[in-house]
Image 1: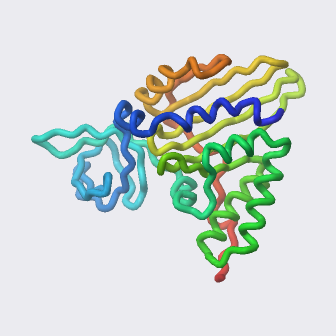
Image 2 (image 1 turned 60 degrees about the horizontal axis):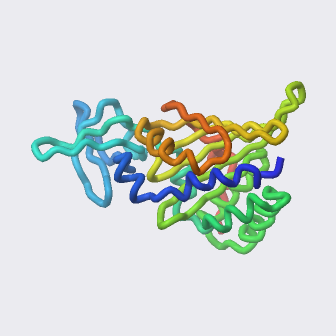
Length: 248
C-alpha cells in the first residue's frame, strides 16, 4: 500500500494548535518535586507552580494534563497521561519535517527508503552525540518497519508513526498509526484498506480531543471512528541500551 492513500490524516496535524489548546484545555507539564499528600511542584507554561494531583506522579517525568485553575486554590491536575520518552528525545532535535515535507515524503513510492537515505546522510555529518542518538533512534525505528516522523508545525512539535502490515487470509492491508501532539495528546489508530475502501479507527486519551476531532470529520472522504483509551503507546520506542554510547 502506498502511504499516499492516508495522506489526508495529515489534517489531524494541521489542526489549529491555538484553537485546539483553548477547547481541549490541555497542558504539558514536568514534575519537579513531590511535596507529599498528592502535592507537587511542577513546571507549567514557563511557570513553577504547586499543584494537587489525583494520582501519584513520578518526579522528572513529563505529562499531558488537563488543568483546572481556581482563584482560591492551587491548580488541580486531572487526566494525567505520561508523555513517552520518545517525544522528549526527539523534541528540539536536528531533524524535523514541515507539513509540506511530510506530504511529499508520504506520496513518494518508497517513503522508508527516502527517509533512511536522508537520516544516514545527516548521521554521517553529525558532530553531536545528542544528534547521533536521535538520528540513530529514527533509523532503528525504520529497521523495525516503523516510520517515525518528527514534525514541527506553527512552533508546535508532534510525532507521527506508521507501520504497514498485510493479512494474507483476509487479503486486507493495514497501517498502524500513532501520533503524539503537544495540543491534542496521544492518538493511535488502525487504517484498513480493502480494495478501494478506506476506514480509520482512532483512539484518543482525552474526551475533549475526541470532541474536537469529531467537529472536523467532514475533512475526511472515508469512514472515521474515534474512541477514548488512556493506554496509548508508541508503535516503537528504542531502548536506550540499544544505542551506542560513544563520544564524538
